[in-house]
Length: 158
Image (cartoon, rainbow, N blue to C red; front, side, top):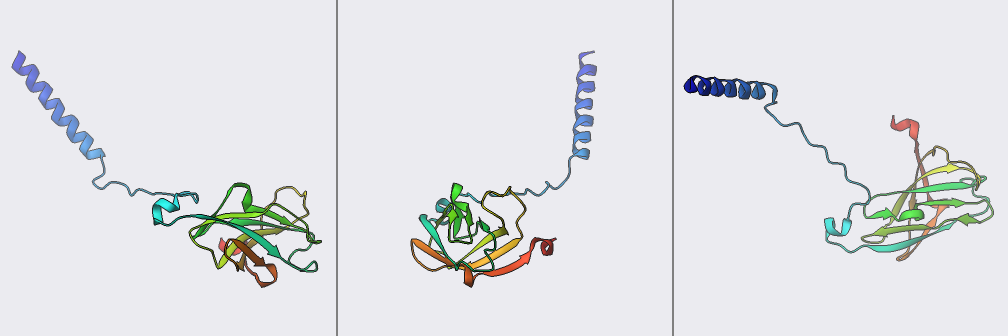
């Protein structure tokens, strides 16, 4: 009787393991890794990060500014945005709220923003597209908006 129970148990184990093997894919599914833009770049690159501040230069009549210009810094190596320092509103009379603050492994020569025209107190709205700007300076970066180029609007990326 004990031999029959043992044989039955072993038989069921083989059947169960065969069923599991039949339902298990032979190749594991590929793993997708998504890294945050706030990846520890010092650890990844072995390079030290430094903080940079952006100062915007523009003329009061700059047509890009309009009734106001909202810029959102787009992270990109060698830099990423720091907290509240990634959104800046620039007004038509030279006023602004916020300062660009980024951390970089070296001073960038070009940075990108998502942009939209809006008054200072306008509600959050969708941005228009990408604005690519050359940058000059070392720790204090100068961004001359008259030198920026407008990229494609977001509809072009669909």
